[in-house]
Length: 320
Image (cartoon, rainbow, N blue to C red; front, side, top):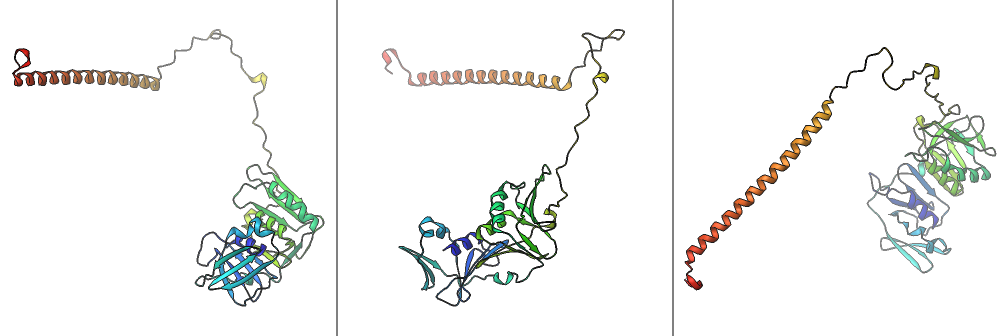
């Protein structure tokens, strides 16, 4: 159940050239695979009752509480559907026969230039500190895995230059020292899955391997790598004038100095005043025109009434 849930979380939300919004179930190898093009999860060690590969929708239902507590999970196929049963629950997933899926399992590296083994104690400590490292609000949320001079995970606040790192004192590395920038969300998921073996090869995705599962993530642009020498930039405050250099003015003009000329009229203030006066005049003119029109309408109505009365030719007593 965890395989379907986690691979569904890894799948893309929209289809592309490949059906990345699907989950790939491989019957012969007992694997469930999900990818969005930037990360991929290969979950193995499963026993399935069919040999071929099928593509099914990525649905969030398998993460529901009612499903996670079930131990007796059964999987089968019926009438073009993959059926997942657990306890009283049944989910019928239509099989996509037209979609194409990349060979994600073939991307899992068998060897690497540098291999890091993150100790369990270091993994627990790192998982608790990843979210608080600088740069967590950026789009890529990058951190740097550095194996030179001891293993460390480092991050930088680009706005302030502040650098923080978590040293993994109990972890080990084999191969040449390397620094690689990765998305901390992928690293956090890898630690959650128990994928403590990290395989790094320059120019290739970074693989996090664990028992029966491997999480793969693209290495970020080398420009995101935080060097150990990076430190917050310290700016000196702007120099203020010394008190002895400051000139003090007394009330009124200084002695032996003519009175300063009056400030000339502010053209902007004059323009604002003129505009206000014109607006007031326009308002008064509008009200006068409205009053004249009203009087004209009243006169016209009276003329129409008198004309009607004359046409009726009413005599005394109201009779024609």
